[in-house]
Image (cartoon, rainbow, N blue to C red; front, side, top):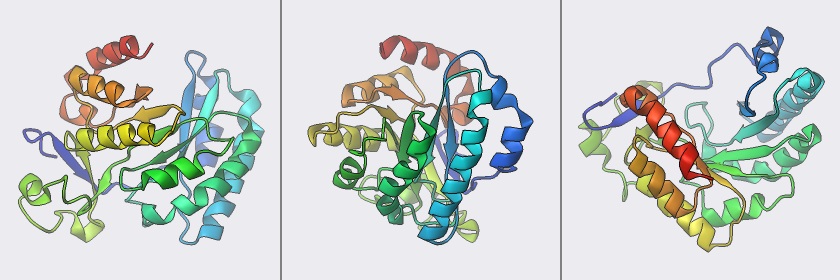
Length: 242
């Protein structure tokens, strides 16, 4: 964590007790205020195994949907670089995954990072089951070198987290990258909602995402680097996206 530079490098995977334990806990079902999204990513090494894992999760969630008090959607994560899977290989699975998850009859929102080609996202997310997308997850170490000066940010050409996979970057350098990606996707004809995330640590960053064509924002790294700003950014974003 580099608070002064405003960046974070993390190699935290998708830790947790598993969907069965979380659904058995009942806290999700008991929420009765605002609609919310669950996030899921298959983490098996092979494509057929990942799709089988998704089918198991969809069947589990479907059995529990009637117990949810608040409306719920599913964010389908195809972008975490810390789960032992190359996210660039997952784009070809999105269409099939959407067909599988469509059985839930709830909003579906695939999540990508900005290394994925815009045209590929536009093609797979033209699927009728796709309601929106999230852009972007953290950027894997060493990628997008024309936009990210890794050495300047962390003082070395090798990741300080190389021993645990290299990690991914969060923080202000992502904001212009995400804005450019969203703007280009809109120019390409992508008309579905885009939830923007990546380095949003100020009201100015919210404005930049909105002007680029975002439909809303998600906050993450600001909770680590500038937590005292969270409430006012949330209030500002809620007022901005009307």
